[in-house]
Amino acid sequence: MIAIIDYNMGNLASVVNAFKKIDANAKVVKNPDEIKNFDKIILPGVGAFGDAMEHLNQTGMKDAILEFAKSGKYMLGICLGMQLLFEKSQEFGEAKGLSLIEGEVDYFKTTLKVPHMGWNKMFNKENKIFESLQNPYLYFVHSLHAVCDDKYIIGYTEYDYKFVSAVHKDNIYGFQPHPEKSHNNGLKILKNFVNLKD
Image (cartoon, rainbow, N blue to C red; front, side):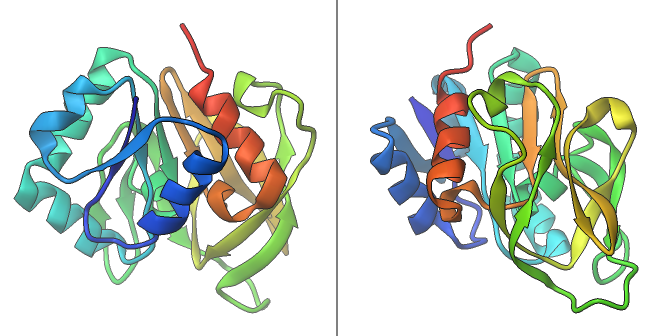
C-alpha cells in the first residue's frame, strides 16, 4: 500500500488517478501517525517550497517523513516533493528542506523562458526505476532545479544547460518532472516504483 502525502500543496487528484491507471493500491494520507503503516510513500506537490516546509513542520508530517525515510522503505518525491528532499531552497529567500539528500534548489540561470514548461527528454542512468525506459520524454513545470553531487543524479535534462531532473539515494527517489502527467512513460516510472523491492 502506498501513501500519497497530502500537505496542502495541490496536484493530488492527478497522482491518485495515475496510480488507479496502473492498478496500484494508493491512498491520500493527511495524518502523520498513519504513514508508518504504509510500504511506500509519494511526496507530490505544486507550490512554494517555504510554504510546504512550514505546513510539514506545523502538522508533524516532517518528522513522520524523516522516520519513514530512516526505516529503509521506498519514497518518491515529485516536482516540489523532490525539491523538499534537499537541504535548502533559494525560492523567495532561503528556506530549509528535509535534508534527506545533500544539495540545494536554485532558480534557472538562463535567458530562456522560465518556468521551464512542457515535454522534454530525460537522459537517464541505469536504475531499476527506469526499467524498460531509455531517455524518456516527460512533462515539466518548474522555475527552480536541484544542484547536487553527481553520485545522486540518475537523470538530467537540457534547458539551455544540463540540470538535475532525477535523483536517487538509498531508498529515496526524486523526479523533477511529473510522471503522473507524462502518459505512458510516466506511468511506467510509477509502476517501476511500485515494483521496487529490497
